[in-house]
Length: 324
Image: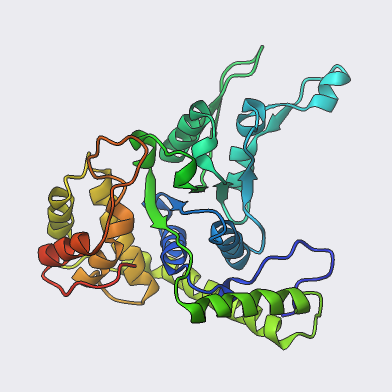
């Protein structure tokens, strides 16, 4: 395996990312079991949210995710007519970004700054991800229905506005992304980025070749986890504990309970465990539940800290510790 060729859009390899473990784990869980739902990464600017998502997509699929830009028109998102053909007097349909994402190798639709996207489009996109069906009404033609299948991945800076609770709930997992605080890790980030920039055009770079080999190995591990997902059993108390956790945190609706179960099983599959344990549930509790707790503050995520970790540990009767 060689380093990315000159002229190709170059992204830091996934295995060279420093930190961002919560987001990386959430993306891996959603890849192993797409039924978990999409992933929302929330954090301030400059925390490598976009870099991490692009690196993940390149690692698992060899291509960047289909990206929905802010300001995209309805036709670009949902599909419309090919403009050049229309100008020539011929009406020929053109697929939108939702269909493109479904047909892509990564099966990821990425929306940067999703909190700034028009609510109308966000509603449609989240409905499509939930039902797997895209209905398009083009002028002069009967309604067309297409099956689509992709994972929605969004990023947002909470300082620039939030998402309505109804929209937050449609994301399977939420990862809180923060800048690294330890000086040693910040130094490692600087050294890694500078070395990557210096060597990315060198096909003989051992630094990059080793990283790409590590990416390939990780992709193989995740593919194997997808294959064995169905054989991972739920523990004797898993479903009971999912319900108890949801009740403890006053989760609105029942979607969170199901996501919690599925995410824990996907994590168990990634770790090649035969069944889901209480520790798997503990580690996915925050990303699965943080955005589903009842709150009167529309669009904001209630704080989750040591007290919430303690609550999870008490419900599950396990030691408190770091989440997934």
